[in-house]
Image (cartoon, rainbow, N blue to C red; front, side):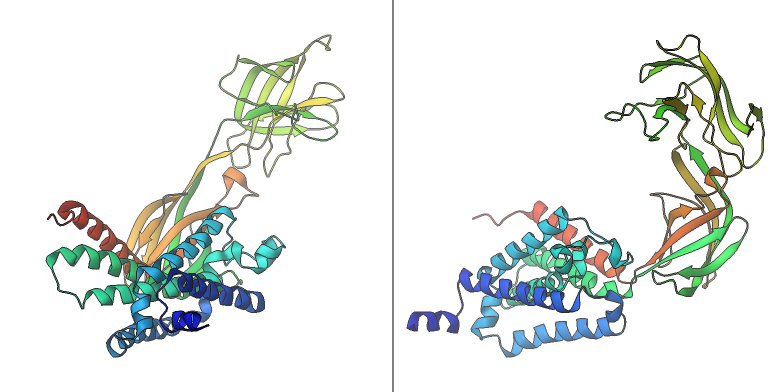
Amino acid sequence: MNNSRKTWEKPWNYTEGFIVAGGIALAGLLLQFSLGNINPTDFGSPINIIIGALFVVGLLCCHFLLKDNHIIRWLSSVRSTFPALLIMLLFIIILGLTPQFTVNEPQAHLPDNIFRRMGWYRMTTSWAFVFLCFYTLVILGFTTLKKTRQPQSWRLIGFYLNHLGLFIALLGGLIGSGDMQRLTMTVMEGKTEWRAQDAKGDIHELPIAIELDTFKIEEYPPKLVIIDNHSGKILPENRPESYMFETTGKTTQLSGNTIEVLEYIPQAAVVRDSAFTSVVPMLMDGAATALKIRVMNSSLKEPVEGWVSNGSYMFPYQVLYIDEATSVAMPVQEVKKYTSKVTVFTESGNTQKADIEVNKPLSIEDWIIYQFSYDETMGKYSKTSVFELIRDPWLKVVYTGIFMLLAGALFLFIVGPKKK
């Protein structure tokens, strides 16, 4: 009993480190079960600034006023650091192994199981994860401040850059998430839009406007597949086959059928009635892709010849029946890339022209504009582009911390350990 009391009076061991870190995670899980995930917008400016300021001031006060307290000394030791990082690593592994959903996605889209209630599908906004991050910041802060009491040397530059950089990046990421704006803006070709919609459907007038000059979609060549007339599934069902069009005159084998491409019309009008199908070139919006093919297999007495098309918003799709069981069809063409040529205006008077594509966003002032979607009902003839606009005013703070980390690593690499 005396030994146990003595251990808790001066907690210098790893056992207490695991108990404290585990207790913090458990407290977070209990809050998670009762309150659900944290809503970052509830902690937006100025609440997050107040929390960050109080946190830093609290660390400094504890360091200067309680510097001889054994708990403060323990929090800056490896005996508290190692268990905290190990439990934090466990949560990060869980984060990497479970699918993550954004805050904008409705709760109904999340799997309905125990992991949902534990917050694992939105790990970065779960109470346990946030508590562990702040606990790690406490340890990191006390460890850095403890170093200031020791004799200073230019060799400590790397230490301060690494620890302060990590502290700034982690704290900025935690308290800055409440100020992040994630909005979608729908713009029609030739129009200018400055209003955007959030996840709840609320409209916001922004200090930034987008004019859509042109919107263009590039598609991959059409494909041919054999489908089951009853189920509509591509054959063979266990390993579906397809043929991507290259040029006319080519012959391919699909599910036991020999298919020859006779004619190709990239922009065609497909008109059909109960008697026949007519396909003619049509160079205007709404035109469909059409291929004339000839099909032969061992069960057919003579080849089957006709047109197939994937249709458009103006014309219906067209299949070629081989027999009562199977047909040749052309799936909807896959999008290769879509590009929005835009002119962006800001309230400060900044104007910029750019081509925005998927994975090729535009950064202007505090905003990052991504190509998000388009009017899929119109397909490649869409005159509407949907953008995602993200504003994160704390991103510069996070980047500052990351650059400090990189500078510290470079410093340690160049200087190296002190040689005796």
